[in-house]
Image (cartoon, rainbow, N blue to C red; front, side, top):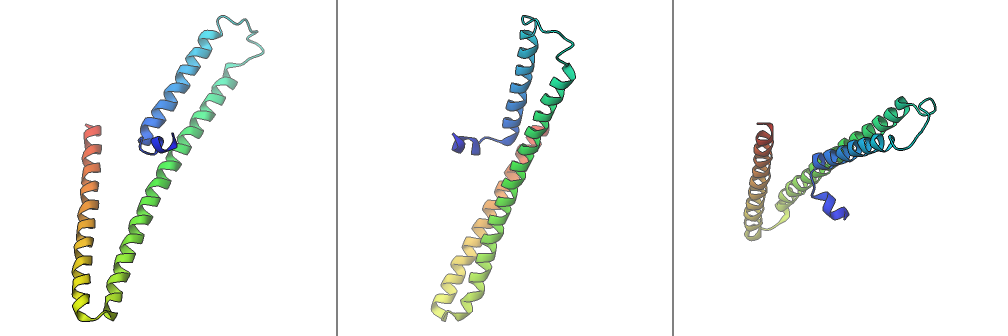
Length: 133
């Protein structure tokens, strides 16, 4: 179940939880017609304050998870680029027949990785522009 939630965009989860809260609020107000409670003992303000507090916590946790996911992806990309640079710098200690082969392979990998990341960024921008229109 948790693995399934990793692939779901966070904005869908937020809208889903907000919808569930609105439906439960409507259901509670509809059921209150059938339960006879003295209005002086139960205030609407307390109920709405609790609902808004839960909604604000939900929004806060959603943004926190999105920020953590973004930071993790950025740190992994930075770690990979530092590893490529360190390997490239350590090629000075390798003898020549192998050095050029490793350097060419490393260069091809770095170019392919850069193309992959750039293509993903363009794809994300196109998706965001498509949603905005």
